[in-house]
Image 1 (cartoon, rainbow, N blue to C red):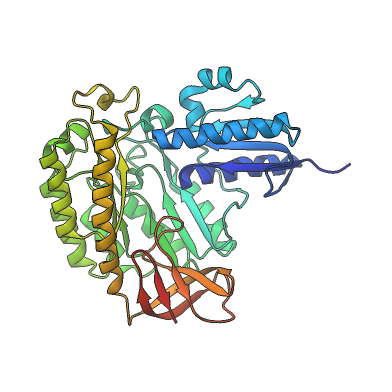
Image 2: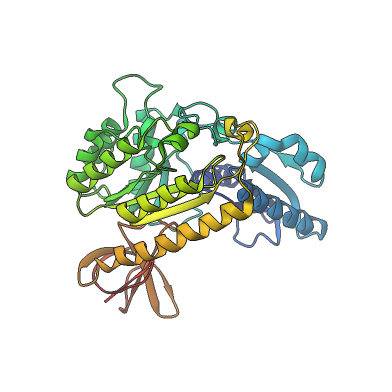
Length: 414
């Protein structure tokens, strides 16, 4: 008797991808065979995202498409889980009665390490914490994920060893805020101490990347560790969200413009080769034209090499949902477009500095005779790539190349 087939669609962030790999592994252990073609399988699982309006819309569209496939007999059973379900399960059940099973977010398993790879074998993610302690006024994460839950150090190291044996070349350490790791475990536990043990435990993982470090929690010790450790990518991910002090206070970011400027100056002094990535929110309730201009001027002056911008999404149950001065979508969109236009020029200028230099590049795929990879200065499926003009490169290998050209977000190497 043939084994049943399973397909999984994972939406949203890499934290969701991590959960999807855990779930896929559970079903494979139960006898299912994972396949890529989700349009024809015994079981389809959809892992949803419910963080902002755009993510919710995408999740609803995918659930609708999955229901259509089930009605056509292309799939026999449909399971939907994740952040959207955690927040809106009762409403979703009424709207999509065809779904066989609903789950919320996966219970955080401190020891989970067995996962079915949904990503290339050379890159992997290690979730060290779940939930958040920051309670920003615009954010729904506390209602979805709950309070901070740090994975114990022993479990982290078990998973790191497991990933090293699998031959991972790039280890991305993730969580809602990885700089808060250990706050619920005791004073002796913090991100710096954890990273030191990870570095000591592993020998063959060349790139360790830190994803989402809250500017309020970045210590001098962490900056110094990144500066001196060759295996930690010189890629600093610090979402600032805004720069105006009044807006930062309304956002409950617990930081100030002065703090942010001091932090950036410190990073660029101690790690001059570092690429800094940030994210900002435009159209926060009450944001005036002058305050938005202040943000633009700051970005033009500081010139972040990597930046993501989000249009403010009014999330129910959050503090900011009831703020006065909600801004029209057309105004928010205009501000977003203006900001991204500025950043496009900044990003291209930032990439120009690499021309003529040699970089280590992780080779990831070959498309129509052209190899594509990334340097340590670009995160997987988030930032730009390096196009490689060379034959017979090994996928998953790291190659030293010379940069010969640069675009707004991508590089060309020879």
